[in-house]
Structure formats: C-alpha cells, structure tokens
Amino acid sequence: MITHLGDINLGDVRGAHGLSLRTGYDFAKHERPLNKAIKQKLGARLDEWRLSFKLHHAFCDPQVVLDKILTTCNKGEPMPLVFDYVDYKGWVTLDDVDVNYQEIAPNGKPLVITGSLSLSEFTGDTTTKPTAPAVRDDNQSLSNPVPVQTATSDNVSELLPTRQPMQHLEDALIAQHRARALIRTLSSASSGDFSAINNATSIVNGYFASNDWTGNTVPPLPIIDSSNYGDLSQILNDRQAVMLELTRSAATRQSL
Image 1 (cartoon, one colour):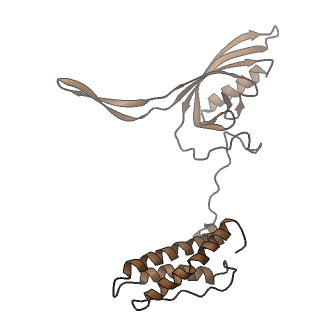
Image 2: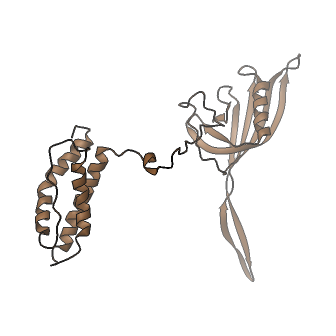
C-alpha cells in the first residue's frame, strides 16, 4: 500500500484503504474499403491511480491531514509516489480530491473523514529520483529533493574521476592481449603496420613507469617492426603468469 505521497505520510495515519490502477495504450484506427479497419499502436497512456482513504481521529487529526492533501492539490506540482518505503513508482500529480465527512463531533471537529484521490503519471522533466524514506535524510523533502550538483569548473580534467591503480592495471592487461592478438595476425606477413601493436604496448609500459606501480621495476616492452615481432611475442608469453598474478593480487585488495 502507499505510504508516502510526496511529503504526506499515509502509512503512519493508516489512511490508505484501497488502490486501483488504470494503464493502457492508445491506437489509431485506419479504415479500409470493403475490409476491416486496422489499428496502429501510438503509445502508452499515462497511468492513473485511484486511492481511497479514511482518516480516523484515533490515528491522526483528520482535518490536519486533509488540509495537507488539499494544499498539495492546489499547488498542482508533481510529487513522488512511494509504496512501502522502498518501491518507488515515479512522479504523479494529484488531479482530484473527493471528501466525505463521515463523523463530526458535537463541537464541529471532524472525527472521521473518508474520500478518494485521483492521481495521474507525470512524465515531465523530473530527473532527480528521491531517496527512499527509510534511508533519506530527515531534512530532505520528498517533493523537493536535493538538486543534482552541477559543474563548477570549465576544466574538464578537474571534473573527471581520479583513476585508481586497478584501472591502470586493467588497461595494461587489455593492451597486452591486444598486442598478442595483433602479433598472431601479422606473424605470417613479411611486413606490416605495427603502429597498433606499439600503441598497445606503450600502455603497458606507461603503467609500469607511472607512480601507480609500486612493485619491482618491470623492463619496458620493445618497440617492434617486421624484423623483431617474434621477440615481443616471446616476451609477452613469458610475462603472462606475472600479469595474471598481478590481477589476482589487485582483485583481492592485496598490496601490489
């Protein structure tokens, strides 16, 4: 059942007593002479929710909760619809409110208020999904979620996340496998374009020459041409076990 409709907590006041959903699709109908019409699917309709509520004086002040509902309806703003604190259904607008004062005290104070709410799906520009109520900050309003942080610098390099040693090592492994694959492809040729191989091996060399590598010195891979590609192939084969050990070490969060 719904527990939150925007900032209105219906779960605590045990207000939600029934819910129905209407969803569907729109079709265009094209008439054909002497034959049946054909239908063309246009798109999905907006979901429509119908919520029955009962506000009882044993659980809340019915008029106070109703005033919150009416204020929300008057604002006409989209708000998040949340089921059971974890199931986020998206954004809706409160379109209609039907109210019935079922019981009233002699002094005129409402004791039991029943009614129904008509909600419809909102598909506008609402890009910030609110945190579920069970884990959100108490200061964060569901109907006014914390805005997305925007960039404060024109320098793109300052906005990019810092690369971690494991990322460099993964690049080195990928480069090594690409270099070996290229060598196998070109091994039958007497000459060829080795720039792709040299670009790949330079990534390996760059990682082991960087400050991210804190292990023993690793000799750089050679720049190759048609006369020495066999030497590089042998070096890569010899280092395969070392590279796999480095991968296992990083994957288990051990010190490289």
